[in-house]
Length: 421
Image (cartoon, rainbow, N blue to C red):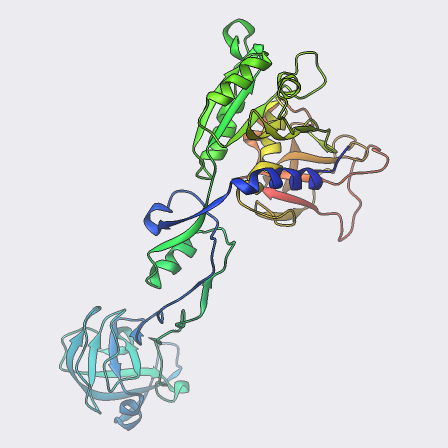
């Protein structure tokens, strides 16, 4: 019996060669996460010029220091300094370039507008009197402790976000909306990213193909199809009865680079994927139990001349197996990289049943106002409980499998969780 980490490596080795790189316009990367293939440096400073972070007035700090000063107090009795009056000439709007500002004067400036020559400071309009634009002169009131405005007040300096030549995105990062925004702000219009293989999702079993008679409806193709498409993969859905030759023929006729199948790999008499592997002389499939609950039966390799990952048929087992093995492989993550947001939490009430001896247990849980609570038990058919869950909880293997009503108290009793999104 192999470990989950060992099987994750096996799946990565199967899927990894199918991942390619392609340069894609940023506008086409808005819907699905992609993994960046190359490290990017900014060709420009961001922002590209000193600009105002407030609506107000641009001045030189020396203008305030040289201006007439008087003293006052605010409504709370705190001392303030009043500067001016200071003449105002002109306005600089965002996107405009203002003329040089003479010493001893100010210019109206809007948020994002470039600081004109002769200025190094912005005074927000709320600190001025009469407190409205188009006034010929203003007075400026600041706390006395400021000892006058310092150069750079309310100024976004050139390159303060990104300096030209600095690394802004590293190869391998999963592109978030913020990453795409940084690239766009740096004037980068396209990115080299990993692309995904075309995936055929195969649900196997007579009970699925004869759903009307059996009363069993296929959920696996929907859950896996949604999971794959949200990664940006092109998918096709297929259901196949317990006929190994029909399975091989259907896959060979399909336009796909990767098969993800559910069912047909356990210990029954009609395990269609296993039987198909026996028929196919070129098969390199490995079927080996994994020390994990749920999701013990697993298969991986090549079958019907196609890369193939075979998952168990129970819907919770299939979905957890996708999260554990296929999703990280399609993202190009190594076995020590987490494919989901990882958190550590204690369980309210501890464990509700005995963890399996020697197996990693992956449980569903809900985060409530008082903490994390397990739901759904260990049964692998309870998909509704999965849908209600907010986290997957990883309970490490035990030697005894003894029942535990509560986790041992202390700093080390928190369990690793993945946040379900």
